[in-house]
Image 1 (tube, rainbow, N blue to C red):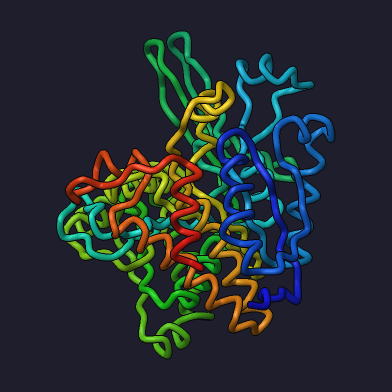
Image 2 (image 1 turned 30 degrees about the vertical axis):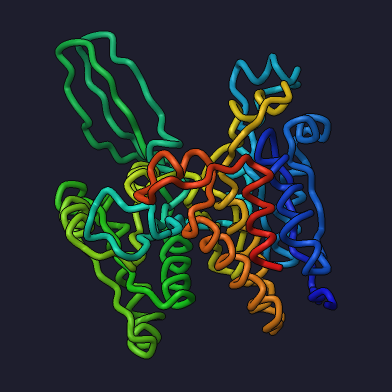
Length: 399
C-alpha cells in the first residue's frame, strides 16, 4: 500500500526523557509505515536547548508561524536539581511559555473518553475542554512581604508623568501583598482564539470570571469577550448552531458538575490551571488529556498535557520494564496530522488521523492497556502491556 504523502511540513518539536523514547516508538510503529512524514525537526531536548542558549525553542515557534501546524513532545522545565543534573548554563524558561508568548496562543485541553475508564462524575458523558488564558495574572505577579504597619498603594505613572493611586490596604501588622496585571491585547487574542476554536469543533463556549467581586480586572475580561462576540462572532455562532455563555466562576463550577459535558470552558490563567487538572483527574488520567495551543492568526501546536514521565525514564535507563501511557502523545500526532490535512485539503491524511485515534481507543476498549489504566478500569482482567507492547498492539489494529 502506498504511503500517504504530505504536501506541507509540520513542525516537529522533540522532547525529553520517557516521552522522547515514546516519540520515536510512535513514529516507527504508527506513523512511518503509513505516512511519508514531512516534518521540519527541532530538538527541544534540554541538552540541545542548553547548547543553543534556548534559541532552538524560539526557532521552532517561528517555524510554526511559517507552517501553521506543529506537534510537540513533552519537555523539561528546569529547576535547581535539573540545573545540576544536566550541567546547565542557566535555568532556562519553560519551552511552552516561550512558544505561547511568540504564538500569542490559548491552550485548549480535553480528556480522551474511553469506555471502561469512567469519569468520577457519573453524569459526564462527553469531553469538557478547558481553554486557559496563558498570560499574566498571578504568574507574572509582583509580591511583597509587609514587615509591619504602613500603607500599600497601587501607583500608575503615565508617560506624561501624571500619577493615579489606589489604596490596597492600611496595614497595622505584618502581612503580604500581591500585584497582578493583564493587557487588553492578550485578552482580545484569548477571546478570538476561544471563539475560533468553538467554531472549529462545533461546540458551545462558556466563559467564567468573578466580575461581581473584581469590578475592574475581571469585568474587563467579561466586557472584551462580549464586545468581540457581538461585533465579530454572533452571526457565525448562530449559523453554526452553537452558543456563547457567560457566567460567574462559582456558578460555572456548579453547572459543570451537573452537566453531560461536550463544551469548551474558557478560564483565566489561574482558574484554567486548576480546572484543567481537576477535569483530567476526574475523567481518569492526565495521560489521557490532549492539549492544543491555538492562536487567533491560525497557528496550531499539539502536544500531550502531561510531563516527561521522569520516574519511568530512570527505570528505562536501568533496563527495567516500563508501562507508560502514550495515548495523549499519539493524539498530539493525530491532531497535528488532521489539521495539516484540513489546511492542505488532504482527505487521506485526515482519515488516517481518525483511524489512528480509533485504533488507539479500540485497543483499550478491547482490554489491552498500560498499567495506569488497568488500575482504574471497570473492565475485568485487563491485559497490561509494557510501553512498546501497547504501541505495537495499536499498530496491529491500524494495519
